[in-house]
Length: 114
Length: 110
Image 1 (cartoon, rainbow over the protein chains, first blue to last red):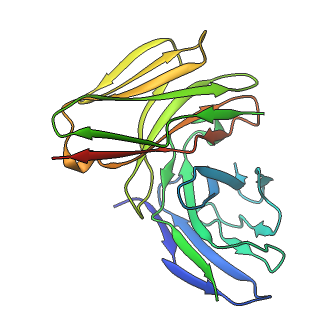
Image 2: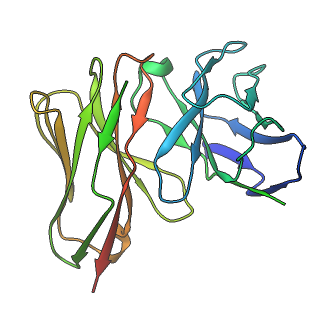
Image 3: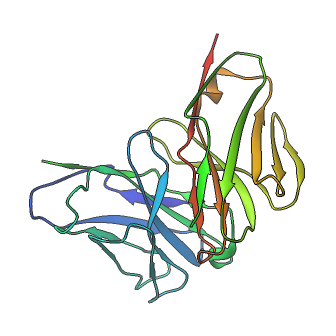
């Protein structure tokens, strides 16, 4: 079955450490996105990518970095510069580039600080 | 910028009808979407309205009034499994990205 796979499901970060969240899709979608969700809150866009080797900052990109070397993969690195990283991170993808309103989401990664 | 307002919580009984409202402010407007998210799960797409009026999909319907910058999600014949958070989202001129509201937590009681 096609879908989006995020790993790990739970991740713990130590002070000053960079951690990378994985996102892989086999839907052949052009666009991919990373959202952050805090408890009881909506989704805020961190980064998005329309095509391979291209990505743009979203509303809350500071302290995060991404890469898009393959169409299927869009990993997110939470750097030590992100002082409040504890949140639920959701990866999504869509067809027809960023103009498509229907996003397909992965099951998320819960990141916590030790 | 873009902002959306929706109630934080709604409670209803099984079998009833519930309406979740969403008002938005956006520079440019392409459409209003609705997503459902169960606790700890992934959001799933429910509906999209680009034009004024009502769109019906089974027990769920979504309405849009562009002149009022307002929309709602209508859930009929509520079931316990409908207990979840519901998010409205708009696409405006900001790079055609979706901006999400804070979500409405729906609790369905027996």
